[in-house]
Image (tube, rainbow, N blue to C red; front, top):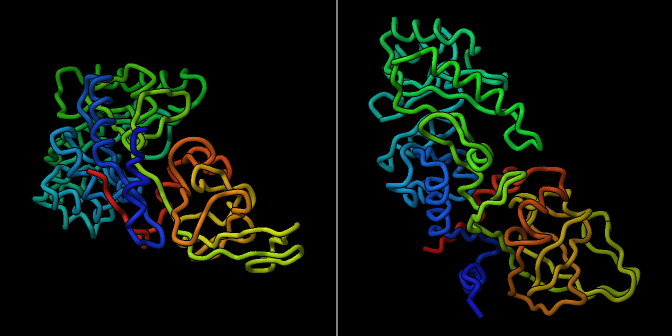
Length: 362
């Protein structure tokens, strides 16, 4: 039987809890996206690479990604420190723009003010086009005016992009409408050349034939298929917690804050070293489960800041064993955890806190 590399990596780590990430899997997912789309890869590494470690992921994607997108100036500077190009997709406060000069970092512009601010700071830009999401970007009808302003300001315009609002919806009609608008913008600009023309996130890249010469992949890089996608992605990470101690509850005894869980009969309860301060959502107390030596076991009682309680009455488990909290397939997958907490996989991944040790399979 093939070894489970994630379990092998966590067995001797000695941590209270840990996220195990497979660097080779990230590379394989990136290679698949490039093969499927035939376009440049813009890797989304904001929020510490979706919780996987920005520096490690940027290094993993060396020679595969043409550009790395982030949300803040601080994240962009981290990418630059790795010797790579960064694009900040969110508006940057005026006071932070000056830090970016001569760092191979681009910012997005969406109006006259953001163009003027970028010009003062001497940073290159990508022009954000609003084709229907109504978050950032110049209205697609007004792109000519904004580009004229960029030219007047002497800006180095590296790229043009939009963002789909419903790329992971059941029907693709709204996404395709936005794409047609974006294609119209590109066509109207005629001979104007951009180094990067991009509109597709992971869902769009995997579901349609996207416009432009690049795709922005985030979730798919980290091994999670967006809704209505079934790409052969490799699993990238799992979150484990150690069994710190085991308590035997008699019938009618309770455990944890508020005595929220009361034993019905004799129960064996594991106290695991992950709580809401580590990224185990408090709401998991209702429907959550973890994988204990191959068996799903329910989270019981109130989740604490630093630990949680698991009913292991019918599982083989000892103090010091590790349980899988998130990752893999079935009831502990990131998608399953998101459903149980009325959330999304992005939130579960990025919610794993910085005090959780990251360990890497290479």
